[in-house]
Amino acid sequence: MKLGFAVLLFLLVAPSIHAQASVTVTSEPTAIVWIDEIRRGTTDASGKLTLTKISAGRHSVRVRANGFKETTAALLPGRRALAVKLLPTTDPAELKFQEAEVTREKARDEPSMKKAVDLYREAIKLRPAFPTAQVGLARVLMSLNDFKEAHAAIDAARKVRPSYAEASAVEGRIYREEAFDDDAIRSFRRSIREGGGVQPEAYVGMAKVWEDKGQFADAIVEYKKALAQLSDSEPVIYQMLGAAYERVEKPKEAVTAYEKYLELAPKGSYAAAIRSILTQLKREAAGEQIIP
Image (cartoon, rainbow, N blue to C red; front, side):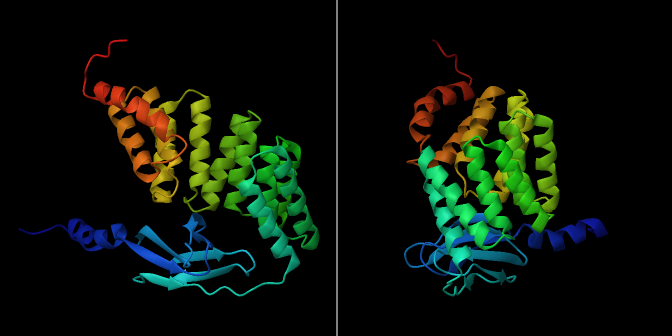
C-alpha cells in the first residue's frame, strides 16, 4: 500500500509536534519559574521544580528569587534538566520591586494592598523605566478599584515596552471590571497577538467577558485554550470550566472538569463545594431523573 505524500509527511512530523516531556528546573529555593512567559510554579526547598507537558522545541525559562537578579535561560530541545544560577543583587529598585510582588501576592485586605502600591511606586521612582513594576502596580490598583491610575500604569509600561502581552491582558481585565466589554475584548485580542497566540490570562479574560454576556459556549472555548497552554498549573480554571458546562447543561463534561480540579487541588478553596454537587451531576450525566 502506497502512502500519499501528505500522509507520509504527517506521520514523520506529527510526533515532533505533539511530543511532550517533563523538565526539572534547578535554581534557588522558592524561586518563581516562567516558561515562555507563562508562570509555571515555584521551586521547592531544595530549589527544584519538575514541569510536565513541555512541548518539543526551544523554550525560554525565566527565574526570579527574592534577593537575586532575575535571569532568563534557554531550554534547548531534548533537555530534561536545566540549572539556572541566580546571582545576588543589590539593585535597590529590583529589591523594592520584589518586595512589592510578595506583598501584593499575600495581600488579603485594603491596607496590605495599599502597602504594595507604595512599594511599587518606590521601585518605579528608583527606576523610572520599569514596565514589569508598572504592570504589577496596575494589578493591585485594579484590585483597589482605582481604574484611572491602573490605566495610567499600563500606559507607562507601554511607553517603555510597546508590545507587551501581559500589560494588554491586565488592561483587558481593568476594562472588564469597568464593564467596558468591547474595550476589554480588544485588549485581550491584542494581548493574544502580542503573545504569538500564547497568553492564557487573556483567554481566561475573554471567557469571563463571554460569561458576562451569557455566551457560555464561547466561554468554554476560551477556557479550554487557556488550559491547553497552562499545563494544569492553574486548577481553578477547571472549576470555571465546570461551572460553564453546567450553564450549557452538559453535566458529563462538567463532571470531568470538576474531577480534574479535585485531582489537582484536593484541598483547594472550591473542593468542598464541588464534592457536594458531584453526586447529583454524575446522576444527571448518567441520564437519571433527579427528584427535588
